[in-house]
Structure formats: structure tokens, C-alpha cells
Image (tube, rainbow, N blue to C red; front, side, top):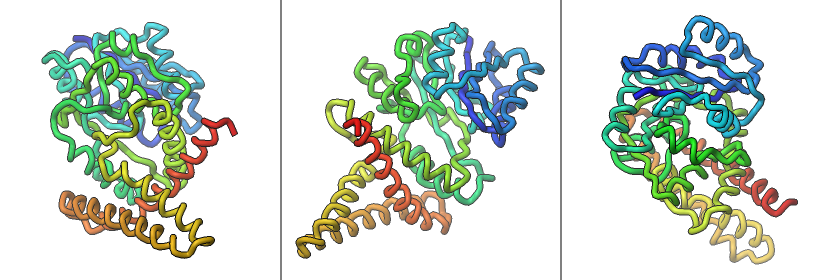
Length: 323
């Protein structure tokens, strides 16, 4: 089977060389090509991509100001995808040498859509490691088998599926969440295999992480508002993440109302206690998995994420109601 690797990038100078080198050194011996859509990077990424595309004929670079879903759809609509299998990857990921072999093996065994793990690199910096403890724990807690959805940074499928589905261009963020929901409606299942491995470099600065969480909350709220059947736990958002917004909103709401009715302060404190209890349970599980003392610092990251995710959700609410 021939494979096309499709990557969308913007300002990933620090990781794009590692990403491309990992793809050029795959143990997969059959034919594959690499399509990269760069959204007019300004940090030197463009120059790196030009050098690689001149040196390696299997790499093709398109410069186009666009969001990620627009970039994917551009490649699909303009017939740039030549492979039988389309493998999606982010420019801040480094693929395991057997990445393509394991993708193709699963699809040849009858799976239509496959995804794998995106682990934090050992040489990641402090903030990236803290972010990674949470994300790595969720990946490593997911068993081999069918999952409801999967992030696009390590996702592959048969060409006919991605050509039929396309991505929702109204969602610059959370489009892969919406994509997963549409797959389920069509009874298309995603097979999760942890042997399909990449390393994923997370946000390296608190500023970028804050922006990510605000946008995540904003567009997740918009996606959940579109979706029928309510919000349910899955492999990406397990039970302990589903309940966090409920108790956070309850905590803030009753804290405000306690200004008028002091007795309501109890319910705010109760919600605060429940959130801390949830965080403690998960952090202990993460500590037992990773055996690193700095895992306990994830507690502060959880609160930080929760606050700014809800800031974004508030903006999403305003957008839905056209304020």
C-alpha cells in the first residue's frame, strides 16, 4: 500500500527538522510521500521546508495562509493525496521508525482508521513535562481496541474516508473532535494501537499554553453545542474531566450567590473540595505510573487549565449567542 503523509504547520522551526528526519528514516520500504501545508510561517520554518523539499523528491511543500482544517481540505480537494492510506501528523511530532509499518499493518488487517500514542519526549522542558504527565497518562491508560475519537496529530485512514468526510473549516480548533463525532454517526470506528508511536512536543511557554486552553474551551463549547446526545466520557475526555466543568461552574456560581445568601457558600466550598479530590486521585495515579515527584506539581496546572478553559468556554457561549 502506498502512503501519503499529510502535515500542516505554522512556526515550528524548533521541531520540524526532527519531524522530517523521523519520516525520512522510516523502516517502511514501500512507496510513500510527504505533503506539507505551511500557513506562511515567519520563524524560519519556510526556509527549512524549502531546503528539505529541494533535497528530497518525496517532500512537497505548499505555502497557503489557512487554518489546519482548511489546509487538510486544500490537499484533499486539489488531489494532492496519492496514497491508498493518508497519515496525518503535526509538525511538532517525531515519528517512531516503525510508525508507517504499524499503520499499514493495522489497515491491511481490516481497520479503516487507526491512531496511536503521542508521548512526551524525554528531553522536553519543564512545562512540556508537566503537560505531558496528564496527556501521557490518558494515552497509556487507553487499551488496544476501538475508541470514539482521536487527535489528528497521529491519525491515519483509508483515502476514500478522508475524501468523503473533509474537515469542518468553521472550527480552527477542535475540528478533530467534530470529525470524530461524524465518524461515529457513519458507524466508522477508530482503532487504537499504542505501537503506532510518535513523540509530541507540547506548548513550551505559559503564554502559548494559556492561549491554547482558551481556544480549546471556546471551540469545544461550540462543538458540544452542535452535538446531540450530550457530553459523554471517552478516551480523550475520561470521567474525571467530564465532571470538572460541572463542579467549577457550581463553585463559581454559588460563590457569587453567597454574596446575597451567605448559606450558599457551603455549596461553593463543597464543589471546591470535590475538584481537589478529583485532582488528587488522578495525580496519585500519574505518580504511580511515572514515579516522578514533580508529577504533584500538575495540581497547579490542572487549576490553571480549568480556569482558562472556562474563560474560553464563556467566549464560545458569547459566539453562539452572537454577542
